[in-house]
Image (cartoon, rainbow, N blue to C red; front, side, top):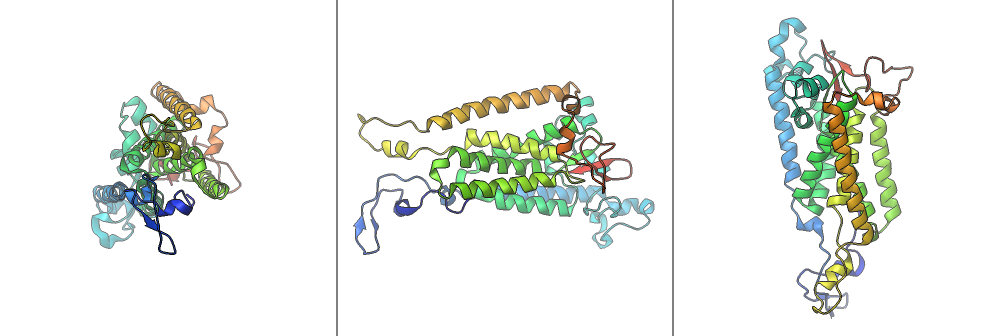
Length: 351
């Protein structure tokens, strides 16, 4: 978000207790008995760091279970970083991201259409967001989570950001599974795109509270566009990105509106005084429309998924959102993109 948020100008001198503040001449200036809370200092971020720790811990467990040296004869001693013992990585020709095999990821909860729909393992829609294809994949996603998530948690608290993260990851998994049938998909980037979507909707619904609105909006849109554009490259599951982004975007309107200044001021007026509503009319409208669209979208997608429908049959051109064929690669054989191929399974990463 823009570094110049609310609480600028004279509001920077206000305090929560209503006590006086001093101006540059040392004179005491009475402060209003309310404050539009500076949530960046109100909340301490602990949930996002816990998410990072959890993802790292899961990756360590995955590598322990994978145990590349155990299959050393098949790979002819080509495990990467063999000094790590059973934590060594699969050969680069099997996994160039320095991680485990697709078989291990599939066994531990990777997202695969057959397992989710035909074997009724819907829990994979959640577990896949805690798995990563390799240490490179993990580092990229965790750095993004730290830079995006900590600030949002400081502003809005762990409950709302936790809900957005988890539901966005789930929404990304649903859309991914609806369009991808021939590969395993893992990664937390659907949840990360949900946080980006929530940042955008938060900016829009609280538009009047920000300075440099246009600059903040353009910057955020450019970041989102670049990240979505990366999704058309090989090995990347852009459907998870899009599903997570849309889920987070709608959730931002529902969970992240800020109260209007007049409402905060009105709470300290005499009881007979007219009190303005907590939110502006457009915030209520966006809240209602977003909630309806979110519930309807997830419901329709889940019904289609568990009925065994293929999203590509309903949208013939949608596969281009995740893979655009060029002279360097093609998208044949996979409804999403050109994936990294392992011994018997193909594999998709959510970067």
